[in-house]
Image (tube, rainbow, N blue to C red):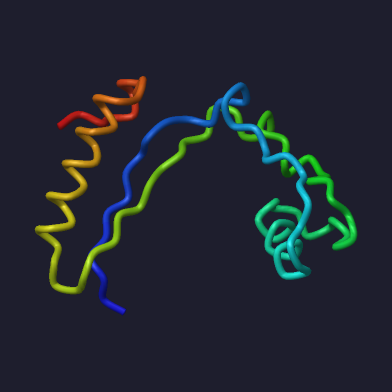
Length: 105
């Protein structure tokens, strides 16, 4: 596949903001399997509703960068770069972006 893409930093992990989702009632068995798959822990039994392990603890990731990836059509590198500039500008306006990340237009 030859899709044009950019990856850019947005912020850093903040344990006060980045909390794991609360357990909930699952609609069907695949819903439960996807929930556990996305909880970053392969050691959670499928009959559990708890997120479970230290992998779900945002304190483990404090200060690590968080980024976004923007993907466009093939042969559209210029359009993807232009879209990235628009997204970065919008993020700079809406978020409390730390200057050391480098999100400057």
